[in-house]
Structure formats: structure tokens, C-alpha cells
Length: 231
Image 1 (tube, rainbow, N blue to C red):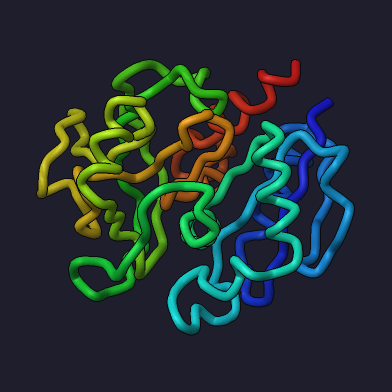
Image 2 (cartoon, one colour; image 1 turned 90 degrees about the vertical axis):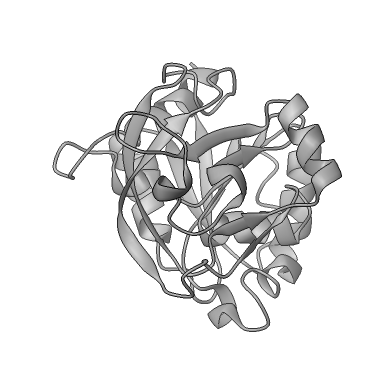
């Protein structure tokens, strides 16, 4: 059985959503981890950093949470090959911890955006996307003020060569263009993985679209892909 944990930082607000999907919908053995916990990650398969406003987003998003005691263990867990997912604020924390390249800055509009949006699945050969089809368009909500992904040109070239872009914002027909980019993110990036493929960050919220009672259940296969690794 998949053993997972959801990390809680002061200001996290999507922790229960992630916990519910992992335990009640997916059937994983799931626990919460407080940001000051020690030595509670070693027996896990998956660690999730949820969305929210860790430490009130002071300084910049994820900049303080990156120094929480639990993060050193998350870094070591990832270095051992453990699967790590960062959603929204969790994605921001992963970039601050340098587990993922680039950074997230203010939306192009300088406004908070909360709505369902289309994503194109760019890479189905990851542990997080195997249940999707290449080029498939899915509909999942976003809710962020700092989702504008930026990265230096040399790192970006390397990311493209390694197929590290997993999700891109797109139109309903799958077109990737400026009109379908909600936040100004480079080349419509919505989610990426590290070189090794065991750490993923994404701004959209798959946990908010993982059950039939939601507008879509397109996020369920994200979690199902992870579960499939340990089937």
C-alpha cells in the first residue's frame, strides 16, 4: 500500500484536501507531518507539500517554509529517490529549496486568479502522469497570485532537452498560446519535474478535481498514477 504524508506549515490551507484525496479516495495510508517534525519520513513513499500561504507568504512565497526543520528531511528523502509533490504553494517551496529549477513570481496581471483552467499533458512518462495520454487536455482549477514561472535561459534549454515540462496551460482544443496563459508563466508552464523524475511541482490543484462531485475528476488520474507505482 502507498504510504504518504502531507506536510503542514503555518498557513497551509489545502492540507486536508490532499489528505482526503490520498486516504479516502485513493486508499493510501496517509498521515500529517508538522513542519517541525523529525525522523518521520523514512518509511514513506510519497511526501506532499500542499497549497496555502506558508508563513503568510512573507518575504516571498515559500522562502521561509524552505527553512522549516522538516524540509531538510524532505530534501534528503528526495535525494534517496522518494516521490515528492508540491502543489501551488508547495511548488513554490520546492523551487526555494532548489529541489526544482526556476521560481514563481507575481502573476502578470498582479491579481489573484481562482478558476478552472485547461492543461495539456506534455509528458506521460513520469511517475505522476502515466494514467494520462500524451497531449490530453484536462480541466483543473488554479488559485494563486504568484504562479508566473520563470527560469534562466540555459536552465530552460536543459529542461526542454530532458522533457521536464509536464503540464502546460492551453485552450480547450490544446493550443498553447498567450491567450491561454493565465499568469505569464514561461512557455505556459503549469507543472514540471526534476531531472530524476521523482519530484514534481505544479500550480493547478489536482486534489480539487479528483472526485465525481467536483466540476471535473481530471485530477484523480494524477494520484492514480502515483498509486500505480506502488501497485
